[in-house]
Length: 269
Image (cartoon, rainbow, N blue to C red; front, side, top):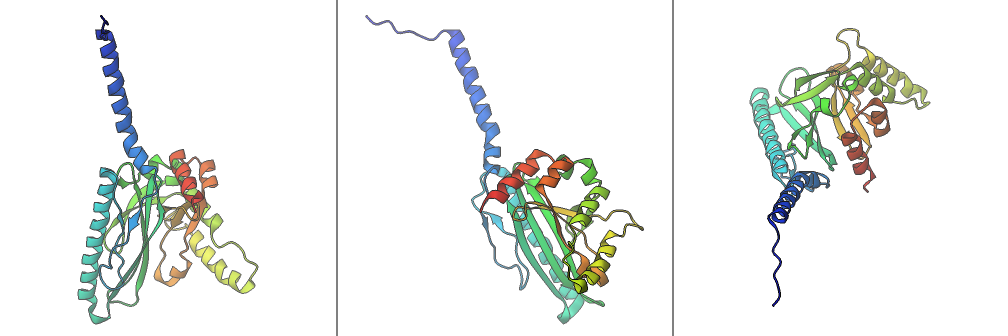
């Protein structure tokens, strides 16, 4: 007669502990594994003529991605209301245009760049740029102070976009210095250099309010942190975006979670 060997109470307890640990590891790995991928984005129909809608993450993998989709829909509703108010205020000559780009679609981060051109009456139209970077693991906008060193975040504040959206800006002497270093490199074209020198003087001036409040977002194609700040209408043509390369960000003390994700996204064709 064969004897059936039964596991001892100690063996059964060890197996239960192993199963619990395994389940915990799977649960912890789930969101990170989802965020490690490049997300697919589905374009949406224009909200109004000339106004791009925010894209939606296609087949969201988890609650974090579903929260981001909901946040993007809220941005659509905000600009729809703002454009309607603009047209009511400015009459038949009013106008609102919006273009939306997504310069990074994972891993880890979704970067949205929004350009608005508005005329709601008054002496001249206005152009404004804003950007939001979402953390795909959290389903919320990133906390720049957790990704960049204090020397680059400086004074973080909220700035209001053309449609009333609140965006984080960073006022940092070091970030501004890196911006100026990459601003309109010399080309040898004397005529252009004359115009560019005036713009360099404009964007360099911190005599009144200190370093400008700058928007930052991730640009996978350019391989770095894009930074930009708006200027008065008369010098709006000087308001360029500058991309700080990942290698520089590393030297400055940016967190690997940021630089590694940028490198991975930049390496993809």
